[in-house]
Length: 166
Image 1 (cartoon, rainbow, N blue to C red):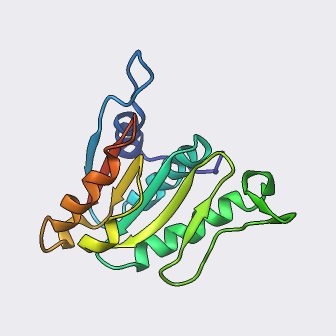
Image 2: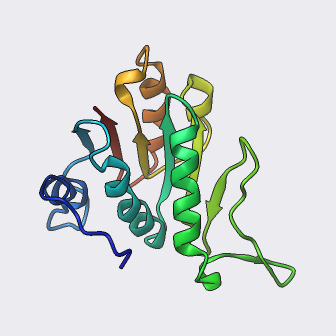
Image 3: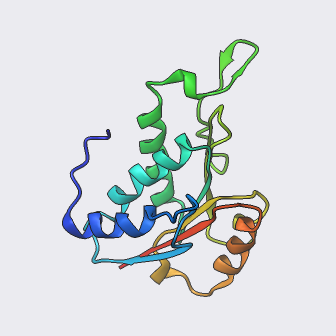
């Protein structure tokens, strides 16, 4: 529904990202996608994030710097902005995505949320998540970010962590 034509490698990767067992839960809790630069890793994440949000999932997106997740945040916010009924209301006014630096977050009425965080131990802590996306993994200088992000998935009945790199 987003007008995206996936390349063959993206279709293959999407099968692992979205595979579920007979119980309806994800088959692959850890998925690592490694592909050359400028080959569509970000494009592949767009429908995954929108689908997860529409399903009420809580998503955190991390990268070496906030630029990549911030671009994705804008794309996701734009993709949902034509449907104001997805967003909660306060005092009769729609609560649209927050764009403030360090405050970027999309919250939907179904409980779904998408936020970006700094790729640091502290940035990944605090909020429970169902899906964690760690972008540009190759650029990470230590595994502290992963160590901080993994516990945010403990309360999820259907967690997934996606690693993206080139």
